[in-house]
Image 1: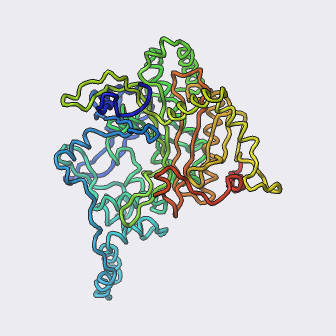
Image 2: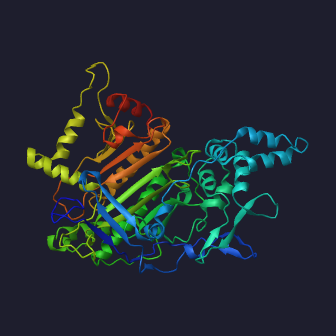
Image 3: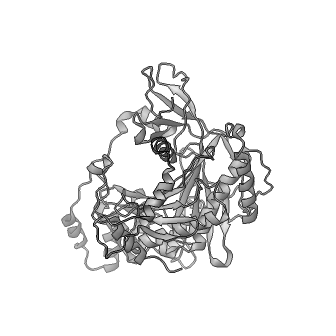
Length: 549
């Protein structure tokens, strides 16, 4: 059955089960061993665990259940087994806490009792603030003094000999033997370290040093030398994405919180690690020999690897043996956390991007008593599949390539209001390989889309010039939107499966800014997108805010 649904014709639910185990090639050249802080007995906590000497093997990662929505246009649900097992022990823990009681009058009365010691009063004032107000200050303050005071309230620092400069934080060992930072207020900590105005020395010891956030191994690295670009590739073994995912993250010595600080070289480094990892993984799938280990693969050799993979893709029989047939790439830029404890965007400390590969199939189970395997072939989900299903239907109905027609429609666009004295172009930027444009029907009021103009549907089909164009256009789109004021932007890639070389599906990237007064509600849940401007006028605004070359 080709229809993606968890409902089977015999009246049972069917779903996939991923039981991942894998080995990751270590392409990191250097070790950056640092002291993260100290334990209560004075022992130093160093980050050796984040810099493995050899390749990394994960024999038994978390199981992930993949459940297609009954209605295929609504996507797929993933359940991480270890998370769900904890809830299964006591389902009544599935609840949200009631809002805390807050009285600003009580707070002021308490502070005014000690007017004779200003310094003590100041310290106590921050300590006594209701949590909702602390969260608001941590999120919105532009005064480093406020933020440092809150940082000292959140965790216990280790200081240099001057007793002023933080060089680490205190750690303890949890019940499972894992090293954990001593953090008094986790939500407040999370908000604080995402504030660009927190002094860099505090950012570094609280979240940026490799290892300070956990034991995730660094298995790749991009070093731009004199440009200052420096990017780590972290492995997330037990990921909510089946078979693990990777994060290309600006390093602790290349602090980038805002797009205005992100150079084109930085963007190239972030994306290079994405290309490199997926090319290497596909080459290993195809038994293509790669001599590189413990070093970044040079660009010319990486392109040779891509070409060799593409040659293998021409073998139809070989394509059927692939375990992984799609790439996944995305980027949450920006962070916000309301005092009511609703997290409004899911970025974490610094600019970083996430990527993975998607398997062809998963083990299948049927929701009967013994969870028997179904005879239905269970194909996994990636968002590009939705586009593939649509363009195949479009071809059957019209006899045309959808993307050829789409490109023509963009170029022949006429303003919706009929004004002939105003620009009608939807194109914001283009070169010989790609086009950045305003979609005629925006699904975020400020949505932009990036599309390859030639028959390139995924990164295996993208040669060096196309990859450079993609990287540049992504950087331009983000610089443009943030210059216009966007602070939270979700970016996702819709790509073609690797085993469909004959299909004319173009690689598409969607930029989805989240605006302050319309986070999405009743209409958007119905896939009804409400807008207050013509797309042609948004294109005019974007072109006026393009970054200088």
